[in-house]
Amino acid sequence: AVLKSDATDQGDGGKVIVWSADTTKAYGRISAKGGGGSGKGGFVETSGKQSLSVDGIRVNTLGSGGMGKWLLDPASFIVAHVSGGDITDTTINTNLQTTNVVVNAAGDIVFNDDTVAIAFPISYSYGSLTFSAGGDIYLRGSITNDNYAVVPFSSVTLNAGGRIITPPGANLTLGGLYQLDVQVANGKTWDNYGTINVGGMADIDLDTGTPA
Image 1 (cartoon, helix red, strand yellow):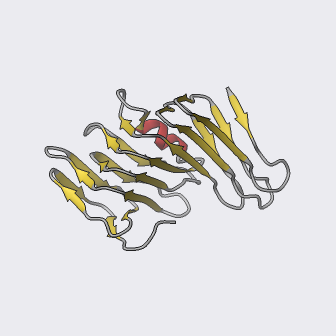
Image 2 (image 1 turned 90 degrees about the horizontal axis):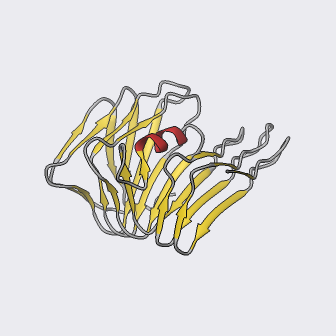
C-alpha cells in the first residue's frame, strides 16, 4: 500500500496518520514530502494503542526547507536485529535517510539483544532519532555514525519516564567515524549494569532541560 500527502510544486508536506485502538500493522510506503521550492517535510504517525508492527515500512518526509517527522506511538516497543521485535534496526537505519524518527512509547522501549545495530546512513540527508518512553529504555547493541556527508553530526535523544538501563551482561557500543551526540533528557541518569564502550567521536550528554 502507498499513502501520500505530498506538496506539489511548493508548500509544506501534509499529514498521514495510521492509527488503531488495538493493533496497527503498517508495512507499505508513506510520504509527506515538501514542495521543491522551500517546502518543509510533513508529518507521519503510525500508532497502535495495544501494539504496533512496522518492520519494512518506508517513510519519506523530505523537504527542501527541512525534513519532517515520523512518529511511532506504541504501547511498548521492541527493536530487534533480525526478528523478535516490532521493528528491526535495518528499518530504522533506512528511514533515517528520509525522515526524523521519534519513538514515543507509553511503556518500555527495549533493544532485545547485543546484535541490534543502529547506524546513521551514509547519505546527503539524514534525520535525528528520539526514543521516548513512559517507562524504561533498555539499551544494548550499538549506535554509530559513519556519515561523512554534508554535516557529519548525528543525534540520539533518550527521554525516559522511568530509567535508562544497560542490562546485566549486555554490551553497548557508541561510536563511529563522525560525531555522535547521545542526549539524556530531563536530568535522568543512566544505570549501567553491563558494559558501555564509548569510542570514536561519540559523547553522552546529561541534559536537565526538556527535549524539543
